[in-house]
Length: 475
Image (cartoon, rainbow, N blue to C red; front, top):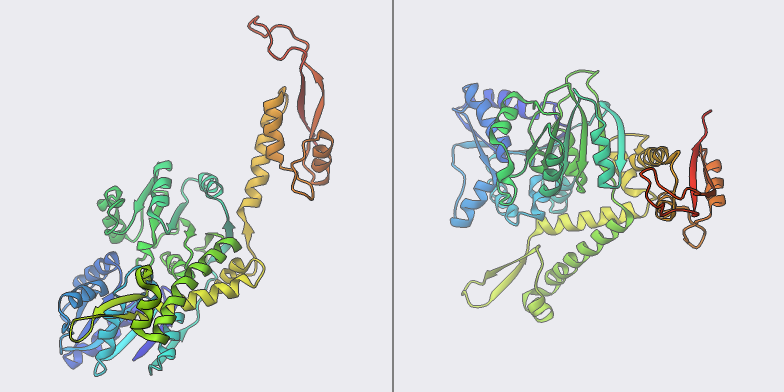
């Protein structure tokens, strides 16, 4: 068993498709190359066939192996595979959160101890931790990650902030944006005309909106023509996109390993090829919610591990609803037995522990991502957005008469509050706030509308009412 942990684009796949291929060719043996995404498989198959190397290398999806194991319990790999290559092997744990069968392909691979098994990934830490926990012996190789191509690291909190930011990106500069939910990716695709949308082929609700011709062209050319590409994490692994025009990568992905895989879709061409990375921040409240959800899963699984099936059934009865636990009949096929999916359980525990560490640190998620991406500084997009939005809004009010409804809207926008979180409505306090924060505006409230008629000679509904005006200081 060999593990290769190295960043994207440093030659892991190249090594298999060239160096290992030549070795297997000389020996008269074969290579089984396992991958985790359909589009990645399609890209590899095309490359292998084009280079005439399909005589030695067979490429399959882990999911196809798992499907066959579901039908044939005794299914196994052919004897002539001397090498089993597990590409993106973080798959076994990362995908276990929504694919309950990753452990079946893993167990089959582990059973072939007479073969050379090579595990490769840019995000191998958690799976290597699992190997160590299970006392699995392996030889390890590692290449340091290099994130020097990231020009700027930006975080944001609100979707509207991201939408405004994306709308300001210059023509000729491209964006790839990854989202956990297909619905978010599709909504942005609808709002931005020059865009394409991609989701998993298994997504029954949204796959009909994917332009297959666009996707095929993207895979073939390793680039896309549109300004914006909105996608789920279905493109998180293996797909290469080589285009200097791609200047922005957006990630609304909570799992940091998946996030790093998404960043790796952009292949760096030279030292001048840099990108701005924009990531949605996870609040302390969201972290707390995730910890509670994971503890709920972990605690009942732990109870099963420590007390067995009968005690577990007695305790949880009809409340059995745990994604780490599966049921199989016992040997005489009478009473069901409960088992814990070790990969999923280990993943849940690892995530929970990591989240607890993050929660202990101020701005923990931001600091965690900064450390992973080897960055010292970052920008919070919402702060810049709020200032720009406030300026735009105040500019639009200059010279206008603001009566009660407009006054309330202005007060709400400024959102000045006292120590008891009470909204401040005083013009004097708002003007003091403007001065203290170098906001070049001033509100005047000693005005009265003395016009009896409007411009179209109708009775003035605001006659004799007081109003505010906003003035802007020009320095």
